[in-house]
Length: 257
Ligand SMILES: [Fe+2]
Image (cartoon, rainbow, N blue to C red; front, top):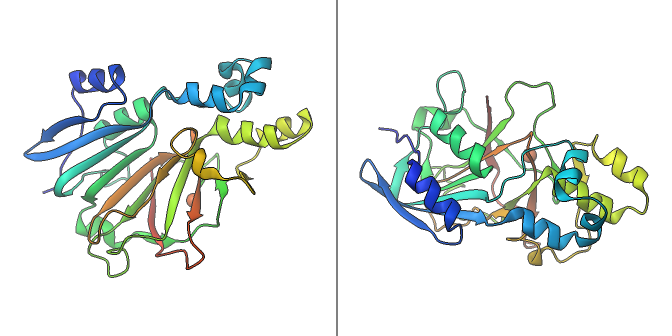
C-alpha cells in the first residue's frame, strides 16, 4: 500500500519556528525524520550576493529574475526509518495535495527510503543531464512543470549509490550568479529570459552547497529508494559529477502537473 505523506499544522509550525531542528514523526506506522534543507535561504543569498543586494533589495532582485516564490526555508528532506512506497501523484499525473502543500512551503522535496509503487516506476524514463548547466526541464508553455526524479531501490543499477548529485538553486540565485559573473547590466537583463545557465565555473562550489545551493546526493546506502520533486517554475537544477570516474546511473525522471 502506498503512503500518503503530509505534515500536520503543529509540525509545519515546529519546522518554521525551529528550522535548524529536525522533526521526528510517524505516519501510518512509518517513522520519519523531517528536516529543512537550507534554513533562512534569503539570508544566505543576501550574504553571498552582498554587493548586488546593496543596490536593490532581495525581493526587488527576485522580481527582476522573474518573481518566483523565494522560500524562507528551502527544501524539505524526509527520511523514513523503514522502506515505504510513497503516493506521489494520481492517475492523471497530478501531484497529490499533501505534497503540493509541502512544495508551496518548502520548494524542493527529498524523500529517502521511499520509492514509487511498482507499476509507476516501470514507465519512468532515465536520463543523464550535463554537468553544472543549471536548467529547467520544462518549457514555459508545458502544463506539467514538476519534475519527479527517482532512484528505484529494486533497479540493478540504481540500487547502488550514485556518483553524481543533483544541485538545486532558486531562480534568483541563478540570475544573481549570472549577474555577478557578467560585467554589465545587459547580461542581467538577458538572464531573466534564459532557461539554462552555465554557472559557478572555476569556483569551489562546495562552500556554496548548503547555503545557496541545495544538494540531493543520491548516495544513501545500497538499496535505498530516493525521490526528489522540484517545480521548474521556481528553481533550476544541474547534475554535479563529483569524480572523474563517471557520472553514475541515469536518473528516473517524469513530469507532473
Ligand atoms: Fe534536468
